[in-house]
Amino acid sequence: MDIKQLKITACNIRKGVIEGTFHAKAGHPGGSLSAADIFTYLYFVEMNIDPENPKDENRDRFVLSKGHVAPGYYAALAHRGFFPVDELKTLRHIGSRLQGHPDMKHIPGVDMSSGSLGQGISTACGMAKAGKLLNKDYRVYTLLGDGEIQEGQVWEACMFASHNNLDNLVVIVDNNGLQIDGNIEDVMSPYPIDEKFKAFGFEVVLADAHDFTSLETAFNKAKETKGKPTAIIAKSVKGKGVSFMENNVAWHGTAPNQEQRDIAMAELDKVLAELEG
Image 1 (cartoon, rainbow, N blue to C red):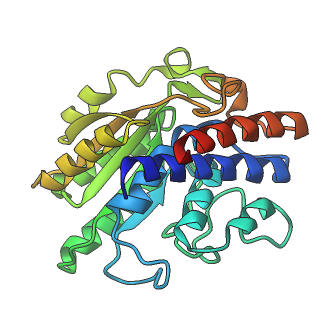
Image 2 (tube, rainbow, N blue to C red):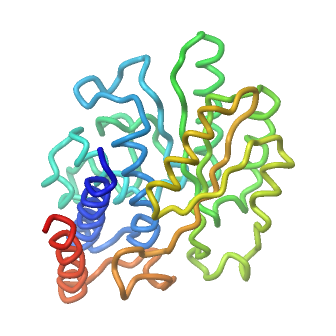
């Protein structure tokens, strides 16, 4: 898939975020939008997966450690063919399998239930270690929020990953600079993020979360790295793609109303028209 098509796919994923949270009247659009390009690259370029066989034991695994950005995750899975795109409108509705946080028991393509911050990376480490023990070639990817890495369990998991030479593990940090209570530097600064991961024995790669060439370089570097895990620190913009949501912490966990939904969709449709024109 070329860069133009990736941009089109990412825009459609962003539209899915807006539609899902609007119909749910709840959810987390800000971090879903900042991670949309990462989801796109993972599911349409990087990962060895098959929507027709979501439980293939040789597939690559993904764990959404920051499980609250499920709207973006679900949109990526839907556009990849794991379930119908129209189902995104059922987000958080009674009877819907698209709960507020990912549920591996009911949603095709979800490898791990998540939502309690700090825990997803630990399960990703377990998956990666299992792959080593079973002599499997699959790779494991996990996406963390930069506010999430304030959790101590994250660093215990990193210590485990390095100690066990899990070079089949890729940790991605969505570094959008904002968490529910405000700027991450004001709440409890995790900086310097890159130096912390280096100190824990990771190969560290810096990337632009909204540039597919940058993401390609980062993920290729991860595949080339042997003997230790890789951390990709992906600099992003909270609410990316919707002007009034960008860099606005209020949209961490606020759903758009009808007017806001219409404005957001018009902006995204305009981008799509330019890309497809």
